[in-house]
Structure formats: structure tokens, C-alpha cells
Length: 630
Image (cartoon, rainbow, N blue to C red; front, side):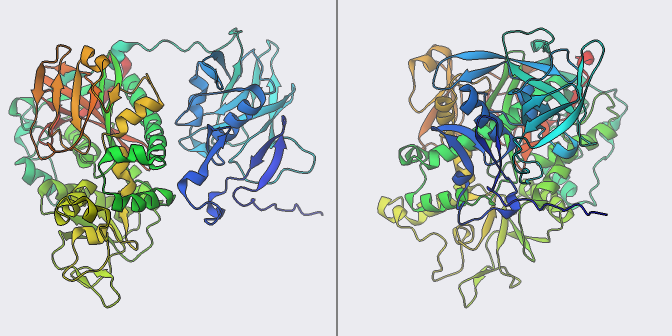
């Protein structure tokens, strides 16, 4: 009996086969990627004729590259492969022209055809991303297609496709494809055509479903009883800070919560995933343009370290927080807090416990999966050491935030210890930094913003430009180690990584608007106050500001509506279109979404009677309600 020969996966970047139209297909087995051939993150970005195709060598990259080389058009950037199914058009490359794109469900009477894109749903084999392939041949019994990022195996000699799957045509002409993976499903195919017969008719989004509502549970004295477990250190610290078992500081609102529809939450998820990709694209763009980088007010002595941090493809974000305005007017993002974002425990634990104690059974908790997603992010973080050091001050909010994150680390199999400040740190004989117990510090997760370290550098250099440009970041010196010595050492990996200084800086917002003008989720932003911004009202924001400090809001008559004070008054400003938060029962309501390893992981809400959401602004419970309940 002849044995079947098992073909090993090809190494990353190896040629697998040639698709019709002479488009090569490559292996994307990232575990075998050669760091010498691919020395930095930018090396993983694929370009043809200066047009960005995607991340080497993922399925979306191949589909876009095949379209570009064979059809002369490309589809827009997508966060996930399955999002291609909903795209209404493609863009003719190098022209201001668009062509219609139509989607056909698996089982449609409009059959797939060579050159169309086959789309898989998210889930199963394709986890959260879905999958896309280029159809090469269609018969009544099977469809063949070319693809990347599945199997990574070289195609047999003379074959111009990766796989084929069984097809069946019904008597009424429906075309059905069987998915070869039992835990995945084929959504359908997309074709560039003017003929929309049998195409999916995606209903226009009902903007009313984007409105946020305030609801109230039945009052049965729940607020008078304790409901957080103070035997858990993170919950104990939370209760101490809040001075009781509650989410909001307002006594009259203990029984109230906010609700958004399933449709709204799905749109927030889509926006989060897409915007993360846009912010990463803009970060790469800024780090390759010294003139743009000048706008971020970062000492030149750190530019090389930031680029080095970004270029290290293994140096990934664990988590961040987007802040949105969500209403019937649409979804707009204010900023991306990639560096030391907060409110994770409120979203990932407290609002769920509130719902259970207050017997809020309508809808679901949009933060329920956050802790698990953070655990999985830590599992793929690459931390390989005896101990990861959590660095924080003796601040109650930092404490419960650190303890909540420590739980996720430990569930991921990472041993950690918390150290407060830098007291007790020392140098060993080889110049390494040791914690108070004598353990070497190699991996760090911090609650401080990177800007805190930069402020320390500026103070030490007395804001002297020459001293700043020549600052010996992270090098051993006389005296005990300081915060910057830990965070800026070459042999210490810090989360969130140093490169998050770029997407967290408000200077990224005008860059995004330049790269993606009039994007549905972005607000018009500029380094200079333009006539357009003045005509519609604008917000002046310090580029490295935090917690809502030093923000000024002006109406279209240039009249100051509201302003906050703080420590960032000396920072340069950017100007962003004023897009007011929805006001509900006296509260300005801001939706926040959290990312874990770059994808959506949960939603929460913050509120304030003022126009600016600040550090002390309240969090309140959030529920995702069935559309029919809105």
C-alpha cells in the first residue's frame, strides 16, 4: 500500500505557485520568517508601484495584488477579510474613479466566475478574520481558487490554483459551495459588475439604532447592599477609590445604565478594527518622515529608539482604548489611547457584576470577553522570562488597573510582580537593573504614560535642545536607576511599547486626515487652524495631552464654549472638528472600545456634565440590547 507523502509547509516568503495572470503566491508561515531578510515591521508591508497591498503574505494582500495586476483596480483597506463582502465599490488605481462591487451569498443564482473573490465568514479555521481567495475556475461540480495564508504548501507542478472545493447546482440554478473546513463557512463571492441581479441588498443602516439610551432597573434596594468581592485585591482597591460598591459617584443614578443596540455595537466593532489598522498605517508613515515626526515634540535622542521599537515586529501592543461619539449622526473617533489606557476593569469586570447584582437581564454585557481577550494577548506577547514587572505608583486607580491586568497575565502563564515607583532599584556589576528583591528587570508592563518618562528627560536636560538631542537614554550612570533608565534600556521590553507614543499623540490626527480624507470615522484635523474648522467649530488639543487637560472648545463663531486647565499648556496644539457628544439626561456620553492585540475586545461608557471627558469623569454600566428594544 502506497503511503501518502506529507508535504511540509514552506518557509515564509517562499514561492508556492503562480496564479492566473502571472501573480505569484507566497508562504505566510510567520514562525519561519527570517529576521535578517525582514529586519523590521516595514519590511512586512507589501507595495506594488507605490500602492499599498497589505501585510505580507496574508490572504487580503494577495487578493488586492491580484486585482491590481490583472484588473487595474483595488478594494479599500479592510480590518478583516470578511469585511470585503460588504464593500460597495472598488477604486481604479491612480484614477479618481470607482466601479461597483456586488456581493452574492453562497447559494446565489449568480454563480462565481474566474477573477471574483471568494469570502469566508469569521470563526473556526479563520478565527476572527475570515478569509478571501481569488477564484480561478468554476464548474458545476467544483470551484478552484488561489490563496495565501492557508497551509503554506507549494502547489504541485503545473497547477495554477491552491485548492478546489465541491460545488452543487440546484434545479433552480442556485450555486452552493461546500467548505472544506468543518468549523468554517463560506459567506459567498464578490464580483465587479454593473449587474446587481441576485446580489445581496444590504439594508441602509438605520441611524436611529446608533442612538444611545439611558435605562433604569427596578429599584429593590440593591444599591444598599455590597456587591463587589473585596477579598479580590482589584475589587477591594476599586471599592476604596469609589468609597463604596458603585459605578457612578451620583447617588441618584445607581440604578441607571446606558444601552446601545446590537447594530450599534457591531458598527463600533467594525470601526475599532478598521481604525486600529489606519492608526498603524499612519504610525509607519510618520516614522518614515522626519518632517512629520518633528510635529510630535519628541526629543530627537529617542527617534532611533522609537523606530527600533516599531521595527521589532514582535514588539506589539497588548491593549488600547478608542474614544467615540456614537449617535444618529454617525460614529466619529476622537483619539486612540494606545499608551497606558485605563477603564479596563470597569468594562471587563465591574459593569458585569453590576448587572448581576442589580438584576439587569435585558441585553448583554459588552465587556464580558475583555479579560479573556487580554489573557490571549499576553499569551502571544512573546514574554519569555521568569518574571514580568508591573510598574505603578501608589495610586488606587493604578492599583486596581494593575491587579486586573495581573490576573490576565497569570492566566496566560506569565509570572509577575508589582513594584511601586523606582525606590529600591539598583545596578548589578554588569550594569543590569535589579528590583528590590534582586531580580533582574527584563520585561515591564507600566501604568505610566510614556510622556511621563519624556517629562523626566526634559526636566533632567532643563529643556536644553542640545542636551535633549544627546540624552544617553537608558545608559548606566552614577546613582540609583530612574524610571527612564528602566523604560529606555535596550535589554528591557516594555508594554505598551515605545512606538505607541506616535498613535497616542494627537499629532497623529492631522496625519490620518491627510492620508484618509473624509473617512467616515475620522474628524477633520489640522496642525493649523483652517477656515473650514473655524466655520464649523473646533477643538484645540495639546498634542501630548491626557485626561482631558488643556482642551478648548470653540463654536463656529469662535466663541469659547468650554476649556480645561492642566499641565500641558506649553504643548503645541492640533485643531479638530468639533463633533459634540450626545447629551442624555444632562450627561455628555462617550463610548469607548478596547482593543486586545489590535482587535476589538469590549465596550464601555464614560459620562460627564461638561463637554470634555476627563480623568474624574464617571463610568456607568453599558448593555447591548436587541435592536427591537431600542
